[in-house]
Length: 620
Image (cartoon, rainbow, N blue to C red):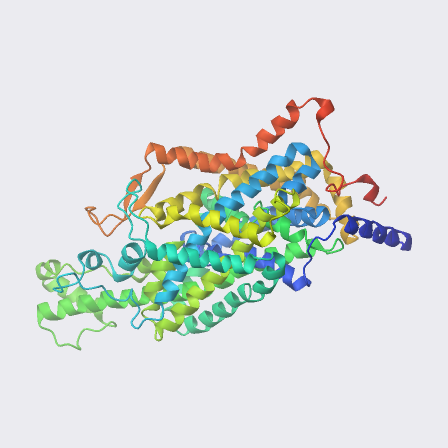
C-alpha cells in the first residue's frame, strides 16, 4: 500500500472524525467486543439452542446451524458493524443516509428493539424472583405447600409437581386461559421494577456505564458455565446426557423444519436487525477492523451455544437418570409388597429379570399393580425450551443436587447477567437513533430521557404481570421476534446491494480497514444471504398459514391435568398477533411511499453532516 494512499486515508479519517463532533467513544477495543458479545449471547443460547439440539438429533443439528452461521449470520453481522462504524449513526440515520427511501428500515429496527425491551425484561423479573427464593432452605419449589385446613398438601401441587406448582401458581398465578386476565401480581411488579432499575443504572450514561458493566455481565456467565460443567460431569447419568447430545440422527437432516429452525436460531441469536449492533459500532474509530470483529462475535456466540449445551445436557442426563431410578424403585416396591419378596432381593440390576419371571408366572397380579413404564430414553426425550427449561426442568434437577441453593443462585445470576447484556443492546437500538436525529429536547439531559424510556417500558410491561401475562409474553416473543427481523434484514441487504451498490460499499470498507472484502462476502451479500432470508421468510409464512395458532394453557380443571390444555387463540387475540408481526415493518413501505409522492423539487437529500458515503472520501 503506497505511502500517498495512507496519508490520504488519514486525512480523510481526520476530516470525517471531526464531523462526528463529540460522539462518545469506547475506552478500548475489549469494551466494544464484550458489549457486542454480551448483546449477541443471551438467554436463548442457554435455553433455546440445547432444546433444538435435543429435538433434532443432537450433532446432526449442528450441520444446518453452522451452514446458516457462515452464509447468513456472519455476512449480516459484518454488514451492520461496517455501516455503523462508517456512518457513525444509529439505525435511522444510517439507512436514511444511504437512501431517503430506506429511512423506514431504521424506524422498524427501533420499533422492534422497543417492543423486545418491553417483554424481555419481564424474563429478568422472573429470574430475580427465583434468585431471591434461592437462598431458602429447603428451596420453596422442592416440596408442596400444606393446604388451608392443614390436613394435607395443596391438590393442584399433588396432581402436578412441586416445581410446576411453584412456577405456574406461586410465581405466575396463571389464569386458565388468555381471555381471563386476572389481577396484577405485586410480587412480579416489584421484581420487574427492580430489573428496570438495574438496567437503568447500567444504561444511565450510555456506553460510558455500559462499557464498565459488561466486564461483569459478559464474562460472569462463562465462569458459571465452567463451574456447572465441572460439577455436572461428576453427576450420575451425565454421560448418558452427553451421548444423547452428540449422537447424530442423520435421518432428521431430511426434515425441512430443522433447516428452518437452524436458520432462524442463528439469525436471532446474533441480534442482527435490532439496530443495537449498528449503534455500538458507531462509537468505534474509523480504522477499526470490523471484519475481524464480525467473525469474533459470530464465532464466540455460536461456540457459547455449544459450550452451554454440554453442562445443560449433563444435568438433563442426571435428571433423566434420577427419574428413571425413582420409577424403577417405585415398581420394585410394588412388586416386593405384592409378592412378599425380601426387601433386598429385587435390585436395579436384576429388576428386568424379576419382572419377566413374575409376569410369566402370575400375569394377573402384575397387571393389577399398574406398574410404570421405565425407560431411560423416554426420560431423555422429554424436551423443554425457554421458561420451561429454566424454571421447570432445571429447577427440578437442582433440588436433587447436593448444595442445591448454591447451584440455584449461580444459575439465576448467570441468566440475569445474560439478559442484562442483551438489554443494553435493545435500549441502545432505541436511544441512539433518537439522539442522532435530535428528537430529544436540548434542555433534557440524556439521563432523564433514558429514565423516561425505561419508565414507559416498565408501564407497558405491566400486562405481563397479570394472570394471563405468560400467555401474552409468548405472543410477543413469537410474533415480534420472527417476521419483523427477517424483513428488516432483507431490506438491509437490498439497501446495500441495490441502492448503494456492493462495489461502492466494498470501497468504503477498504477506506476503513485498508483491504477490500473478499469474494465470499460479496457473493453472500449479493446472492446467498438474501436468498436464504427469502426462503426462511416464505417457509415461515407457509408453516404459519398451514397451522392453527394455539397456546398451552395451565388449567387445573382440565380433564388431562397436569398436561397443559392446548387452546386456539380467540379471533381478537389472533388479530393482535398479526398486528405485532406486521406493524413494526410498516414504516418501511410508508416512508418509501412518502418519499416517492413528494414533488421532485421538495425531495431533500440526506443531511451532509450525516452522510458519510461521499464520493470524495473514497480512495481511487
